[in-house]
Length: 348
Image (cartoon, rainbow, N blue to C red; front, side, top):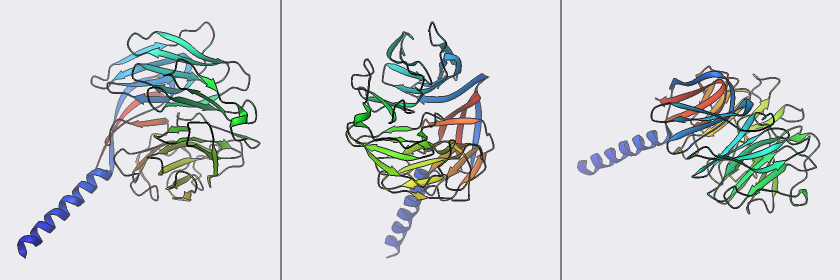
């Protein structure tokens, strides 16, 4: 009997240890400076060897993840290139989409930096907010309305050709409903689902089961009703578990009605840490391999961490000038913002 009791205790300890490691019970971070220069960066992504970034004045580049060496480039154009707040990738190409008019999608070879415009939209109302690829063929970008629906463009051939979805095939937006290009996290493409979030006077979730052919729209409890309120960032751990954050950009310390979680693919949302934790959130991301329990947010109240589905939050760093964050693995993330890119190492 004692033998079996010992085995049980050992298994229990092992299980608890694995669970602790999986969930990443972090209490501190180490910050390493990667880039320090005058640039605003709201769009980053990582592939196997590099962290890619895009910023203002047509600037973009990559960071070697082994050496931290930074390679800097600039979009080649005869006209002024607006700030680039959307970035996406396939295996061999990076795609950049600046905000405002004209909306040009730049396809850039990772191998030799060859650039080409594969989509162009000229409209004084055009303003794209976020872009992502689902796989090597299918990509999607979303932006503010130019008519009475959100702007959505898609590609099904790896980014060579893009088409804009007609408003006849999209839900109508409410008056004052648009989106915020805060951190390239308004659109999320999962295996079977496509998600978009809106903000402003109306803040909702748009979900598609067929890559944009049909859409369902779900209400959210995030603060809304004014021009600078609503969802500024969203992330989905899988098709079911998702998190939204934002708030009131004009009242950045207000932490009411600015964080919510879903466990049913966005059909219903629950406010969490209401009146607690951080205020305005610029970007939120799930920690990999955490079963959706662990999240990190950057914004007006620094680097914030939760290990209980967003119900409670701990400030791990006070830097208020980080706009976007992406994880390399469960313990290492990169963040960027005003004049900087940093590497963040999480530990207990």
